[in-house]
Length: 114
Image 1 (cartoon, rainbow, N blue to C red):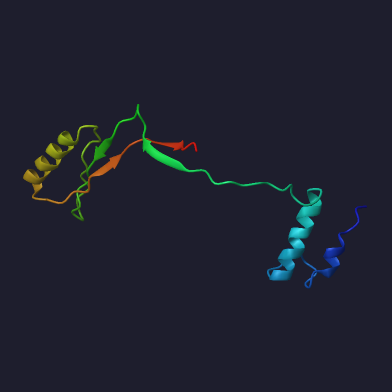
Image 2 (image 1 turned 120 degrees about the vertical axis):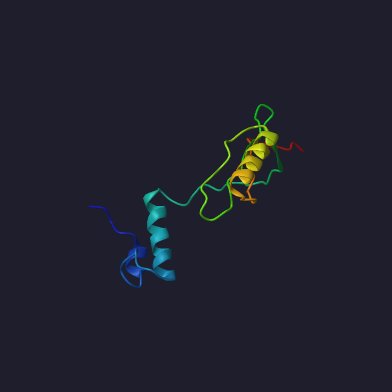
């Protein structure tokens, strides 16, 4: 039979799962013992990054109509002018004149070497 950790008897509620500052400390102590002791120390350092558009990716545009009862949306395209033409055609047919143009692309995060 495994011996209980001494901190268990020090838990004010007797239950390590109970909510409260002291019971959380007891729960952490039990978890550390279950893993074989305190965690290994680690050295963290911060690195600078920058983000760019992926060189092989493309920008895609779509534009849904903003009229409440209208569910129309342009087809997604990499050509902004094509989406604009679709919006103007929809305006001509319905009189709806507000659209949300959504641009999506693939981003690439690069680490800046010092």
